Length: 475
Ligand SMILES: Nc1ncnc2c1ncn2[C@@H]1O[C@H](COP(=O)(O)OP(=O)(O)OP(=O)(O)O)[C@@H](O)[C@H]1O
Image: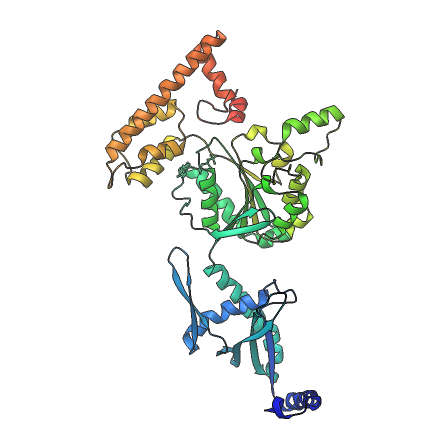
């Protein structure tokens, strides 16, 4: 009515003065928290924290609620406060009122149809005599609680890069450290390391280091490197960013992608030896040029998925990402590289400080087999175990291959059939290796035993299933 009957020229005047009179006599303070700050595309962190904080209490108080299904493993229903609804809160005996609202505006940019733009907001109302308490302690309490609820309830995501953007799906991999086939003490060491890292915020701040840790997982294909990454993410409740380096155009794009990763995440580069053209060229180039520059800016990625153009990402760009200045910007993060060829990697890339922990995932040991048998067949022991132990000591078989033999062919599955299948597989692998060694010995004119040993070293294998580096060390 006011807008309809009051002359337009007077409206502003009245609004301005009535507001100041109203503010003078009104004993309450009102704060608005908008969903978006400045930039339309940046959601306000304060708004998200308040949303989480209020959602936890609004289901008990609000009369009108919104429901949404969260597609995590349990598909739970999340209730939140509906638009233009109010709830009260109490803090140290002080009562406060939260209300949700929505600004709706119709914009008509270049399209024929008007586009509706909705912006949510929350308002907090409290008496002005509690100003110090609310602005100081209460608001930081709300933000802290809201962030903690977010961490607890969040759906973890698996991101992958398509060009310069991240796309994501909900991450629901069932791998855990319990199901990983590995020696118990090695497993415990890795878990302790991860947990210590995740709790060491103050420690990292005190020693002046960015809160991040690098892991290099190496070993033959099928030994559980990817499974280990999923187990790490599940243990720490982190997101995963699976970075496909070959589709990143240049260092600027790499930096953009990495700046967009969030805290509490694992950044993974799988098969790093295939993503970066490493040692060979670099060493050769350095030798030719007679210099030992660690970060050769001319070293480029192979020409692959960057629209047929050669990727311009350089080793120096990658090294900057791992431990350059900006890498400290986003808090708690793990960087994980995987490779099948440890020895191919540039020492600069994997030196301690960049890749702090080197974890070898190797061929299936008897202890690892027992974990797999427990997972797949639910048995702790069997009279065929002795034979399997003997064969695993003589033959190399990856956990992936062992797992395949243990997979029941029909349900509910017969343990004896699976174990016999595994024994047959191991015997065949042993025989194949023997024939191959004989064949190659004939070609070279050396004895099969010598040849087998040489082969083991060439292929990165060793008597006990370790990779080349260890074999050489042992020798
Ligand atoms: N150590 C292990 N513990 C439990 N399962 C394993 C292990 N290693 C392999 N597997 C099984 O084998 C499959 C393949 O393993 P995974 O993809 O993790 O191997 P990888 O080392 O990452 O191989 P690649 O180098 O080819 O990427 C997985 O689905 C998993 O079920």
